[in-house]
Length: 191
Image 1: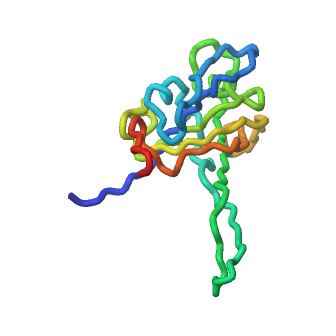
Image 2: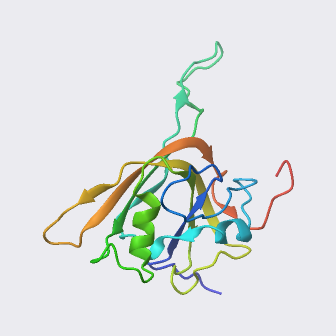
């Protein structure tokens, strides 16, 4: 069997509340967090909201270089660079509905309501190699990365040559999956 490259769009992103949301005018509730960030379940992910179809293709979600320590030992004869703390970042751009007050369902309005108020606490889950509209539900075996974040202030991006957008910078909260992990597949301890 030959290898076949995954062609875009093959990234899906979900928002999952961490279960600690303050009450506000928006009654949306999207999950109660994750029991194990490195072993998320399809039920936990699907309790969140698939925000992919509201997103632009220009986004940043992933790890950055780790912090390092360069303290050498007495017997080291060359420089050392020991990885310490993981770092991650997230900035997503969302389309705005032409009518932000319309009553019928709109993923753009749902996302605007979700992130209109800053400091919403939850998880961004990113799945690779499946189309976000054709396969909107997380399933056993899907490969994902998971990041705990606070949402930032919704910045309006007004470009005369592009649709109106909301840009949200998310603040890392010190928890992320151990690399790429599989949904509903927890490795045994020590693997």
